[in-house]
Amino acid sequence: MSTINGLPAHVLLVHVIVVFVPLTALTLVLCAVWPGARQRLIGPAVVLAVVTAALTPVAIAAGETFEKRFSPSELLQQHTDLGGAMNYFVAPLLVAAAALLVVQIRERRRKPLNRQIVWVIAVLTIVVSIAATVQIYRVGESGSRAVWGQMT
Image (tube, rainbow, N blue to C red; front, side, top):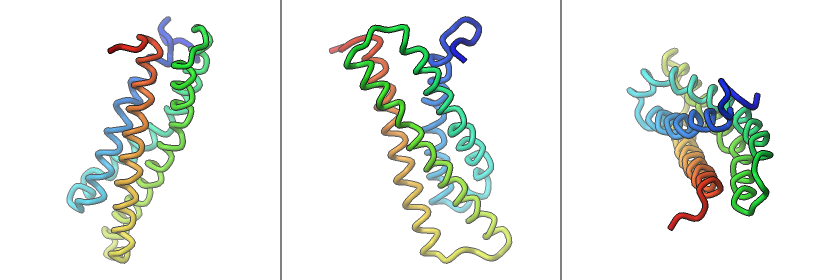
C-alpha cells in the first residue's frame, strides 16, 4: 500500500504510530503501577498495543516505498534506520500488555501472582514504555529533519 486516497500512506500511518506509541506506553504504565487503573484500562491498553504492533510494520513498509521518491541523503538514511527498528520497540509493549492482562485476570480470579513478579512486570513495563516513547520521538525528529532539513 503506497497511497491512501492519493496521499502517501506512510505520511498518514506514521501519525497514527506517533500518537499510539506514547498513548499505549502511558496506558500500560498506569496499568502497571495502579491496580484501579488496570481494572478499567487493561482492555483498551491491550487493544492499543495490538493495533500499534500491527500498524508499525505497515508504516515501515509504506515508508520504504515512500523513500524511493527522494534522493538518498544521510538524514533520510538515519530516519530509515531508526524507523526500521520501531518493531523492536512496539513488540515489547505488546508483551507488557499481555503480562499485565495476565496479572489482571489472575487478580480477578482471586489467584494473584506473587507481589515480586507483579513488581518486575511493572518495572519492565515502565522501561519498555520509556524506550518506545523515546524511540518514536527519535524517528519523528529524524523524519522531520529529513523532510525539512536542518532547522536551527
